[in-house]
Image 1 (cartoon, rainbow, N blue to C red):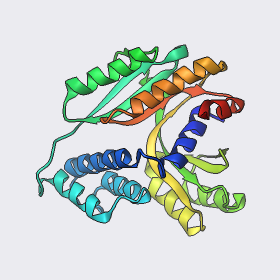
Image 2: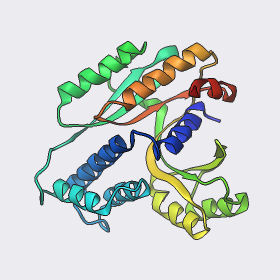
Image 3: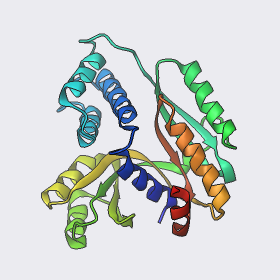
Length: 249
């Protein structure tokens, strides 16, 4: 079990209730605007936008807010123009970190990300230094109450590649192109979807088997995720299950 996957699942469960909800909405709205700008506002013709809108709906973003974001992206309403930027770096213990951002000011965002790395015992790397250690996959989290046989059949029907238990839920990975088909198969099987999106996944992980080092790693991840321009943080670390109770305190 990937420690990072477990931590991400815990954060997902907490995120729907905690004070960061407004920040989550802002990040999702940016993603919708960029998707609409790059591929148009027609959901049926823009698969990326369709995925971003579904993600926003899953997180209870109001329909009117989603509609305005699409119109800002297509130019029907005035709005800020965001640029997609990905930073690569190393965290404590030599872990590889990818930071996906949407920014209206590249200089500000770069300075903020660099500061977050340096304050947490990490460092930025040159483009291409660590991205080869990650692959883009469709990742779907399903409520763990769903029967394993039903989930497995849906995964096979929808083109899934892997099915594992993470913090009591089911986590499925698949090729990016299979996301919509796999989600549909799971919903038709009666499964409750916790999250479904295309994201970077580490090809292998680095064991972090010291509690103090694990705290440094998670402090870096949290610091980066708190930045307004940061959309996603992905890292290739693995933390033993027995550490998590202490790390959540």
